[in-house]
Image (cartoon, rainbow, N blue to C red):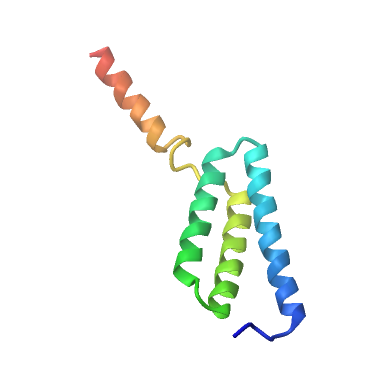
Length: 99
């Protein structure tokens, strides 16, 4: 049975989803690939966890939006930062090649 709720609720959800995708596009345009990929993966995980109901859609959309905004302001550095995976890998490789 289709949802027969308030059109304002549906419009707000649509706006939040659009803003989320706009933020992800901005991240890729700024060449923040680590951040953008991480955001897309989180969006897919949240979609899988909360899918199947209207309440799940609302919770997943709002959570994903706040995560996107947080990472827009504070980019993750799991791989590329000074303590990230690739930096540590380079340090270890340099130590081994130097003796």
